[in-house]
Image 1 (cartoon, rainbow, N blue to C red):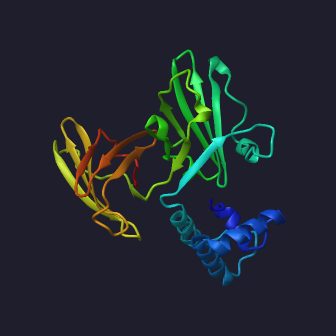
Image 2 (cartoon, rainbow, N blue to C red):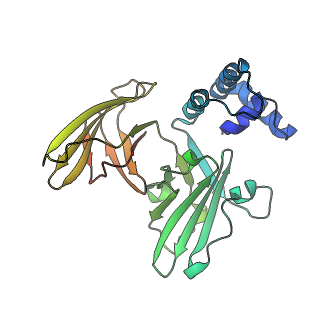
Image 3 (tube, one colour):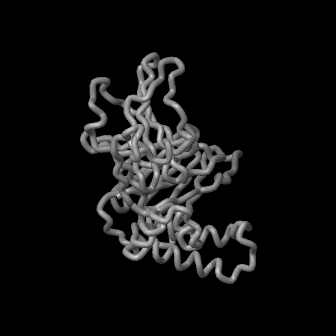
Length: 286
């Protein structure tokens, strides 16, 4: 797995306190084109800056560097393994922010999984009183937890987490969860639609927009206001510049709501009702 963006920055600046980790990343960067390019571009961006070391990079330069890291994670599958507590396998003490297992009202953790690189913790939580289960995904980088696809191939499950890294899931109480394969699937492409403008005096109206990434992933989005509510129709035109991409999974998320559908080339799928006042995130998976 790729080092985190912060680790790559510290490695490039020779600021990693852990010599062993510095050597591990050096070996990785030598073999990984994406991370090597990230470090080279990061150094070139900071080389001519006369800022003192403790002054943060301008937002525009930081965004350019972050985009390289996003490309490295594109379509990555992160395999998770059962977390062994009290050993060196525990990632960053449950990422510190995880805290103790929930015990209020009988809610408790029935299984915990992790990835060491990048550091991610996935907990399967059970609420006996409400009779439901949910997933809680935790990571230092929010993009590794929020609106991420969690896959359980043996159960045929693909679950999208919400903005807090949480998602409801249906599991059999007797299931041996630690024997199953758990993994995270990062999107092939990500698009964002800012709050949409429309004429509230019109009963029915429509607005169309084409979104495209630097890698020529392209979607056509049609926003429709009807008497029964606001809808979003999305058609995937190309993935990585290819119109013959087979099929893809498309996720539309707004804050703590999301929906996942399969789409074929040229096929339009509808999502709704949606909130036109909230940012809409569109993610494509293959």
